[in-house]
Amino acid sequence: MQIEINPSIGDVEQFCEDCASLNYNNNRSLQAMKYDWCIEQGGAWWAAYDEDRIVSMAGAHPFWDGYRFLFRGVQTKTASNSLSKKHLTSIPWAVLMPHQIAYFSGVLTEETPAYITTNVSHDESGKMNRTHRVLQLLERQGIVNFIADEEIYHVTQSVWRLDVGAYYETL
Image 1: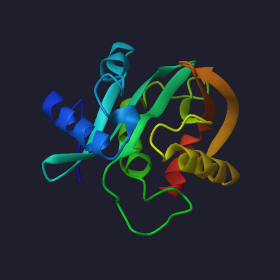
Image 2: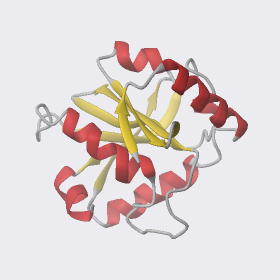
Image 3: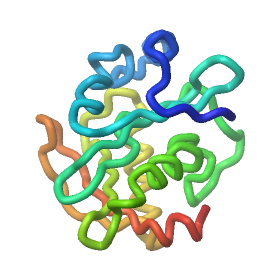
Image 4: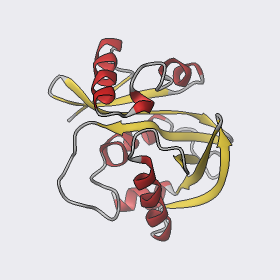
């Protein structure tokens, strides 16, 4: 799998079409995925390619006192047919996030943490409720810590603080 940061717009638009065909509404268009907004905030996008086609994307951007990873994270292709209690079959979680952490590694500290958010009740893709439950499992494993349910951009979301050390041990 090839990883690119801020892939070509043409590739992203094709990926958005793929997402739309799967009813992944948060990623159905550049506007829906807040592509430009993420970059304007000081963030970036990562894409995983299978041959010449994007199969997964996620953004990262400044958030609160740190950085938010896996923003609009999605995959259109399954990485594995097996299940993983540590979420390592997820391309955004297992493949893209290490690149996001590396990109922001110079600023991630105890005082500048990494966050992940999940939607509590508004599920645009039909997959977010499952992802939310996975983060609850990962909390029991010490990989993330639940911070709070907050209204973020007009949607109630759970905010999770990533323990980067525990994440890398799991990886």
